[in-house]
Length: 162
Figure 1 (cartoon, rainbow, N blue to C red):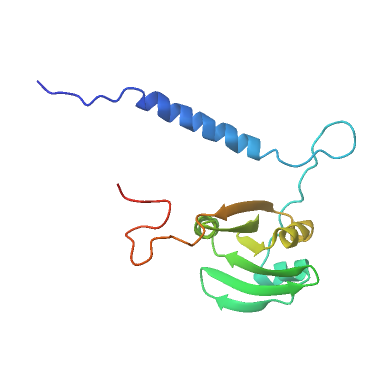
Figure 2 (cartoon, rainbow, N blue to C red):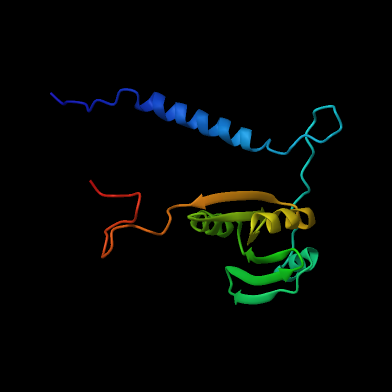
């Protein structure tokens, strides 16, 4: 007689997690503050700019100092009266998303458009949004960088093996 492993609640838990993720995604899509018109409608964000690294930099008022010029991404340092930031363009949407997912481990503010991202201080990113449109994403650092362990570790702080 074969014994089936007991998996009570796995299907329901997975479905509940999926529904919760969907609700959080929908809630996140409606984060624009209501305008002062009194009718309670939310303002529509400016569509994200498109173009090459140089075209986006020009729209942002920057003379780009190109640091990386590769097939999958191009990256430049920009300095304007509003502050310093890094502007990066990607060959694909997937490349952009993978880059952001990795970069968010370090925290920061990201202005994200189609196949581009600008990274800088929150006030610089907010000012850029007025020129480039896009969506602001923020992340807290994954950890403080102080593992407290000294010497070698198999993992990093916050993820200890049992």
